[in-house]
Length: 158
Image (cartoon, rainbow, N blue to C red; front, side, top):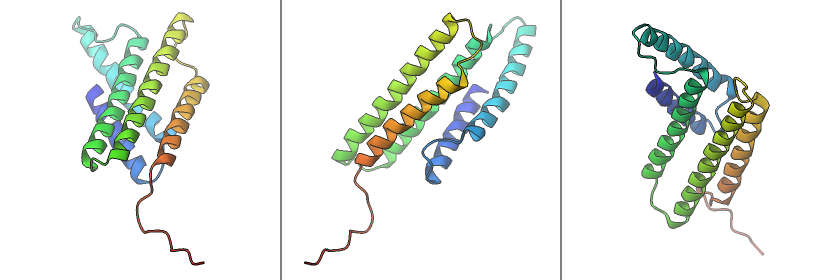
């Protein structure tokens, strides 16, 4: 089920990128998350009955779902990088994207640790949204540095 969640996240990332959006709309990713978390909880209940629980706490489950979402972003990034030409300027931007995603991953881990220490059930939504917003802004800045492709601009006449 976790692998399916990762695959569905990659699909949503692709769909979002092709539609011109920079991030997956929250209602779309939350719907996929909710559906898959219920399936994971059901599978975990069945495994627990057999004496083999996959997750002992809700925190473990959320951490694994988050890890698979991050894997989905890396998978898409690797796929996209392989599909594009190896342009020297784009190579630097790919590294910038990877670095921005790695920062997001690290900041998410810090939020999870803070949440665990404060004994809350989940990261407060406003904190997670702020982290996502900052990450998206960083990616937009990188995107703004990419040269635009397509038709040449009109020639200037004196």
